[in-house]
Image: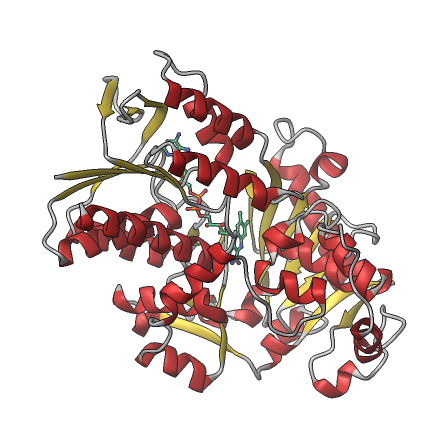
Length: 503
Ligand SMILES: Cc1cc2nc3c(=O)[nH]c(=O)nc-3n(C[C@H](O)[C@H](O)[C@H](O)COP(=O)(O)OP(=O)(O)OC[C@H]3O[C@@H](n4cnc5c(N)ncnc54)[C@H](O)[C@@H]3O)c2cc1C
């Protein structure tokens, strides 16, 4: 009997437990999988149905591109969600029209090859001319931050007006701090070395090859033929979480909700002990499990605290202490999310239709960007009520403390006020919203700082070399998108399954 504990029940933990249970069950292996989450399941994936529409409080769309995109679509299909998938097609106005807010106006990004040859404000040159010049240039040899790599190869202007806001939109981070290598591994060498196709890092390459066989199937063919660029589900992404929970239950995964893991300790012989406490019962309930493998999908800093300085001391525990120091140093950002809903259809409420707009850090603004949710997924608007427009303001990130102060003391109405002011200034919307949902997501997105990849590889090597069966999953290490999280969980689950089946 193999025992596995999965820490965390967000998209990473649930998909890891599901993949592993399914794989072991298919081979009639005997297993016991326990998934533990300190809250309800879902992590940052939170969809709210107010009766007047569906509001995503965390992630709001999944990209279809690449193996990681295909893998997530395939998982949704396998969980029986194909009929509930909603999509944005590549050639639609929503997919094509994205804006940069600068010089007090919404400036469209080039959306066709023709437009790449035009000068489009705020960029003082055409994208084509910048690209042509960059062909004969190399990025600085020692550059690793997104800012250093892109500005040394493509110039300061394109970095300031396009790359900086893009990084704010995806990572809510400062492109001067973010490692290009860790955040965009797929194009890292191509951009740095002027090669069109890139030899990926062996570890990533291995992952890609591993899943290549899964890239083509009926649902993927449909997605490609119909030209989807992004997708969601009719009831919001929380449906994905519910389907994964059902899938886990069907494969006899034990799910412990409202149960916090507070200690992870490794003995000299490699045995791992996980201690957890159930927090929602009047009676205090503590449990210790000694699994063969632990998959951690909780944030790096939380794992760092669990494994730090545990007694009794063992030499393996010493290695965990070293790892703990690296984990607790990993950075995250705080993000304020304000979902707003206005009376009237998008073509009446919004000055321009499209996916949304981003704001470069050199422009004074309290928002990082605004997503025009009703343009992206109108299926989430209420079908019974009068037309309305949903939008979401994303705020803070690397700039949170400068703009709003200590996140522990920021009140919801301050974020709401900042969002309303930005919406008024940037979109000209001065009406009272019919609904507002405000959330401050603390430490919600990791910032992969320069050197991140080396640190993670080093931790993984240490665990492997010393036969400590603790596996690092979740958004803290190898990609923050939902697609990356699912893909990495699959990789870990396959690795453990192969190991168990070969024993
Ligand atoms: C505001 C926002 C918008 C985003 N937008 C997008 C998007 O549009 N598209 C996209 O692809 N990605 C997006 N992302 C990224 C993506 O949502 C996340 O990277 C992903 O959901 C992370 O999933 P996870 O399971 O790795 O971690 P989490 O969701 O953080 O789950 C970790 C789980 O661990 C539990 N936990 C923590 N500590 C303990 C403990 N000690 N004991 C037990 N349980 C514990 C938590 O309760 C949580 O449920 C967004 C993220 C945010 C925050």
